[in-house]
Length: 111
Image (tube, rainbow, N blue to C red):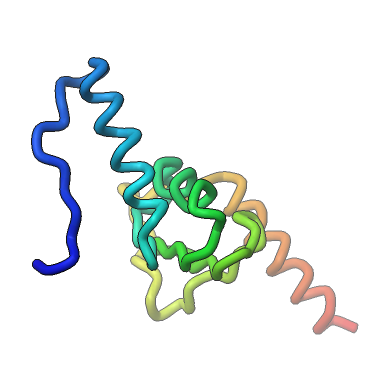
C-alpha cells in the first residue's frame, strides 16, 4: 500500500523496545490526516490531542471534528450506531452526557 509507514518488530510487552515502539505508534497516529479508532480508546484520544486535534477523530459512537473538545461530541446518527448488547459497554461519562442532552431536548420541547 503506498504512503504507509509501519514499524517491524515492536519488542516485548512492557519492555523498553516495546515502549519505544508504542510511543512511535502514538506519534505516527498523531501525524495522520484522519483517525479512526475503537470506542473508549485512550490511545487514539491521546494521539488526537498530541496531533493538536487537527484531524477528525471517529469511533463507532462519536465523530469529533478538528479542534473540538472531547466532551463536546456529536453522537453518530442512530442508524449507524452498533446495536446495544452485553458486549458493548459505553463510557459512563459519555452516557451521562447523552442523557443530559436528551433531558435538555425534552425540556425545550415541553415548553
